[in-house]
Length: 110
Image 1 (tube, rainbow, N blue to C red):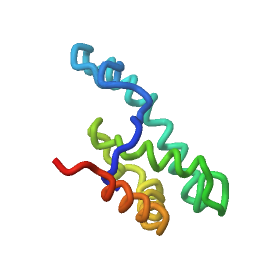
Image 2 (cartoon, one colour; image 1 turned 90 degrees about the horizontal axis):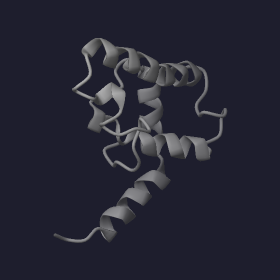
Image 3 (spheres, rainbow, N blue to C red; image 1 turned 30 degrees about the vertical axis):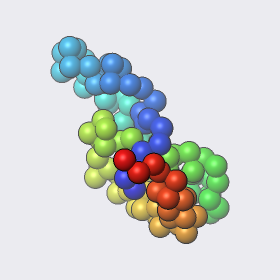
Image 4 (cartoon, one colour; image 1 turned 180 degrees about the vertical axis):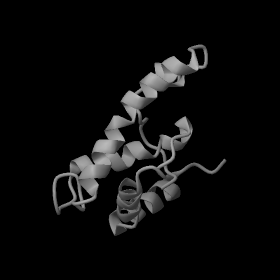
């Protein structure tokens, strides 16, 4: 799960939760609001294998791609164990592993 694709959260480091020039109290308000999203996903994934039920779908693929950017924002999945398990489950899918192998094979040698 260390292959970044697109940013999550859908912001950049200049966004309020990550701006070092804002007071910590203000940044905490933004982080609290932002982290409601994984809280919702956590609750859903405690009872379902995938976002829309028992079958893998495009929403799952998109969310999986987004999670690759969490480390860039120093966001750990420890507070959301069901979400963490969900990403591990998707990461282990043969199609995901095949995509990573194809991506690695196509990468330029520097």
